[in-house]
Image 1 (cartoon, rainbow, N blue to C red):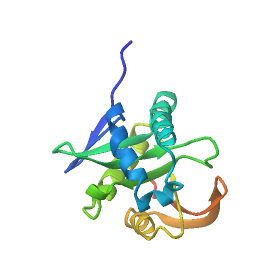
Image 2 (image 1 turned 90 degrees about the vertical axis):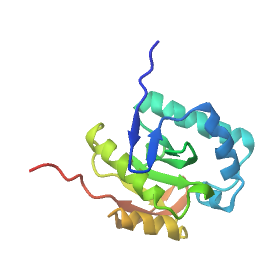
Image 3 (image 1 turned 30 degrees about the horizontal axis):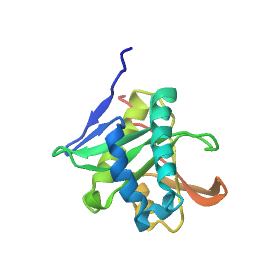
Image 4 (image 1 turned 30 degrees about the vertical axis):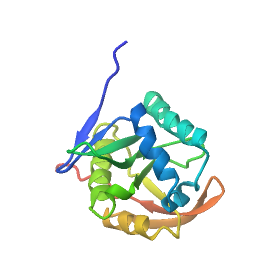
Length: 171
């Protein structure tokens, strides 16, 4: 059968659906201290299952984590909207690999993913669920215009819930 392939472009980035060869970079990220905010380093098979879960999320819901590439083809992270079992509502989420940090890629990709969720999926203003210790992620949420709403827990872990602004609709 034919498979619809979606993609988004920004000034510097391409957001594409996940593919098998993303696994190596995800495995490498799993070994870094940054993985602590995604539940910590997990066994290789769990990274594989997480990758397959995202592909399944796309198949089931028509959205998920985009794989983010520079125009040079460098895979620098994953940004998108996820709504897994146990989530209170759809979440705009991100993680950028070391090769993509400090360049504004996460904000650029998150804005594109958020706009796609609003325009293509007609989503309501979504949340980002962020560990209170994740200063970089909290700062990014605020840079994106998200506002602290409440403290909550996700799968038993405390988190801060940030609410993203509603889309600007033409008058």
